Structures are given as C-alpha cells and as structure tokens.
Length: 306
Image (tube, rainbow, N blue to C red; front, side, top):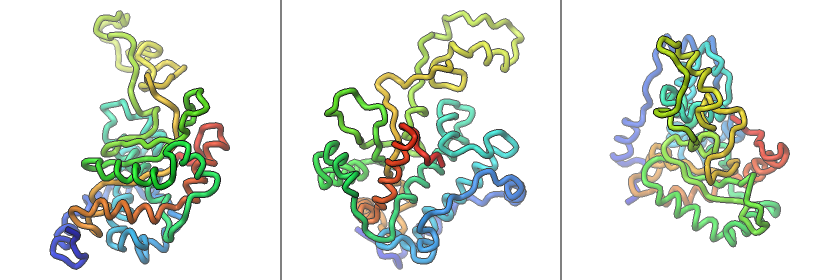
C-alpha cells in the first residue's frame, strides 16, 4: 500500500525523522573549524526548490539530503576537530578507520557522508540515457541494458534493511579478455564499497607470536613494534599493502541509497520497489560516464575522493 503524502502515516513519519540536534557549543566550534562541509550538488538549487522531479518531493529531499547530510557533516566535524583528519576526504577517512574499532563512529559518519553524496551526485532532474561509450561495458557485463536494470533493481529491492547497491568498475580485473568490466556490489548500513576498507589479512597469530614487548611499554612504542607484523590492511600494516584474498581494485560509478528515511516520506511502507523504479528514471548517466572517465584519467584512481 502506498500512502498519500497528506496521510496521517506521513505526518507521523515526518515527526520521527528529525535528526538529533547538535549542541550549540559544538556548532560554534565547527564554525571556526569547517574542515568538512556539505558538498554542493550540480542540481542542488533546483532540488532545494522542487525536490528531485519524479523521485523525491521537497520534504523527502530535505530529509534525505539537506538535513541528513548536514547532520553527518556536523558530527564529522565534531569528531575530527583539531586533528589531522579535519581536512581529510570522507573516502580517505572511511578507508583509514574501517578496521579500527576505537574509531567506529568516525568511520560510520565519514563513510555514510561519502556514500550519500555518491547517491545524490548521480541524480538528474530529467531522464538521461547511457552513452555509446558506456553501453558496450554494460552489455559485456550484464548482456543488455534491460538485463542490467532488472538485476540491479532486484538486488536493491531484496536488500533487507538500510544499505547501498553499487555499480562498480573493476580496475584490476582478471587477465582474461572476456572478464566483465562492471559488477554489482552491495554494502550494508554505512559500509564502504572500497577494497581498502575490507578484510584485514593477518598472517600471524598474535597470541602465540613473540612481540618482544616488555611490561610497561607505552601504547605508542607497542604500535611501532607492530609495524610490519600486524597484517596488510590495518593502520600498522606493512607498507606494501595488498588486497584481501579474492579482492579486486574497483571504483564506484553509480549507487542507490536504500535507507528507509530516503524513500518512506514519499512512497510509504511497501513502496521501496516503486522508489527504485523512479530512481532508475532519474539516473544522471552523464555523471556515471564522467566517473568512469575519471578512473581512466588516473590509471585506476578516481578524481572523486569526496
């Protein structure tokens, strides 16, 4: 059942989707240290006035982007103020702290801010179509554009709970020429799609491996001692980092946000599939192609760190 925008259910929803207020002292401090700011969207002014035509109304857009992204950035500034991380890209922070339990909050807010921006940056106020440069890659990977659409939307609709579904380009594919260059990747909650934030390979059992650490050693000295012995993906890993077993380098071309606060306001409970179908009609394929071109320009390194 799709609830009307004027329905009682929607008024209740709007009441519970108010994000926590940031303390005044924190906001004042952030004005002095605005290392992280809400990114400007290409169609941001139009979206602010009219919502995303055919996808989100003005209130839905305000919840999913203006209010929520603002909240994430405010929290991120509070967590990184007066540190070397206060000017780091959100993507950089997500990869840096993905495997650090003591920085879980910082990772969550940085990764979610990056993911949400990726989603909104690929929205268009009007229908666009994939270019002649992108279509061959889609056809090679998914057999056809309709097949890709069906698979992608089915994957997103089947994702239970909040998360993101991504179209990624593999920048270190298998050597076989027939290997598909594109793939669909699913992440949950604020999880990062980038391989640098994934599995940490630790070849040594630290419970049985001698560390040469004596009692009374400071945490800093212990950390230095771990350098070169604590795996390949963590903050104290060896310099010659490698991918996790089975992992591949990739960059994100496109993503859809399946968090309920994005679509409940406009589509109601049970309206996820309708939201996804409407989203497909508002993909900015020109931006998707630019994301792909950015990867090519830097030999596998995207210009869009965000």
